[in-house]
Length: 633
Image (cartoon, rainbow, N blue to C red; front, side, top):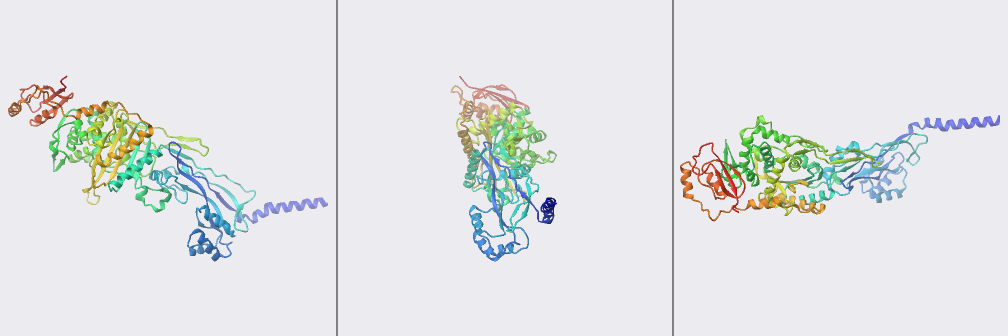
């Protein structure tokens, strides 16, 4: 009986402890969140660009604080916070209130030494960016609540965040939350990590070169994009002024905006490349076809189109090499607005590129049905259309890689907390824009732009740089007219021209006092390209195209045995008869034919060795003159 009574007492006490006490304290149980660790962001070689560390944050249980005035006074000195603000918080009724998030190690140590009941720490995750401003606009930032608000952090927030865990706790006499026994516990699942295509070294060099140019030319802002044309991988995407995501609270939306993808602008002469590609791809023009550039002034309806230099007769190729606006218009008139519009669309303009970032602009392109004759002309040299730097980068990549428009690749891999790949992103071809033969022909001409044309400041001896300069006036959004003193200078290039390794876009907004793309933007390209050559240890390429460009840039010699009969030529032209052009250099022959306004086709290089129609032939309105050029061996 004694043992039975003892056993019954034990059962009653166990029931009271395990059941009744739980019900008694059920209302005191608190569900405590176990924070998960946000995933890291790495560059292509594993360099951490965004990391998460756990830092103690200080909270108070006001109901437990006995001398709030004394506690507030002591804390204000340690935490460098306002005394009255702390006192108001400590006098509130309740069991929990934050006092300060993310304490420094020294602050946490000094508070712990106070040993005050009602003051406690809770570890919190803090996002930090070890390289400061490096790729700041690309990475974006995370708010105090751990949610991505801009850039990669926002776009991939669902992968990076992870899943918090929880446990149930009970408050002890000092206000601390301790683990409640026999309650469920769910561990936290840390977030996934990302590996980007960004190369931190190239990103840094691009940013420094861009910063130097923006500051040198007193510009408003600028951006640079470096892309691998065959894969669409973004190696660098730089914006200046810089943005440090560690201090996002002190920056404005203008600073953290990724201008390389969000801002559209009129591209100017960099757009002539796509007109050239359309003309050659449709076989409407050949590089050596001749057009008349009207000596620098061309009246079209009520608008006069100007060239910086007064060009007369130009080949299609040289119209691009020397960036003649009038030459571009003449090319475009024959291509036709409907055909050109289709190529513009195929190159990806007026649509988002599909990059893994929010806030991308599709640019601006009016429907072709709304193009006037003037619109059809000005768009040939990059006015009346809005593009982004990224659209230019991907469109030039199509020229560089044989005609394939690629989707930009920024995030390459997603890893779980154990390092296992959960998602991989591969290069994606959106469509074939032009045929490879056309692309190679355009690359050859763009090589000459750098070798002897407007892009010479981008040239690197031995590496066959190809590219195109651009200078465009900015539109005043209030008046709809062009500013007279605000320009955008740009350069887009790649190298080597025969098999390009990278495409680099440079855009400088409102440089002054000089504003030409060849002067302001091309040197930025060169500086970045030289670093890539050094980093990748690229050997010089065979300089065949360079030799050809230099040879063709020299004046064509006149054979000593040939002395042009100018008096006879003038008489022939007066009578409407084809003059004798044989033995003349090409430039002189074109100057003569300018007087009879004939369409001219050219074959070969050197001076005139044969002409059709033959000298003395009657000239008709539909006469096409073929000049065969050669070199006297």
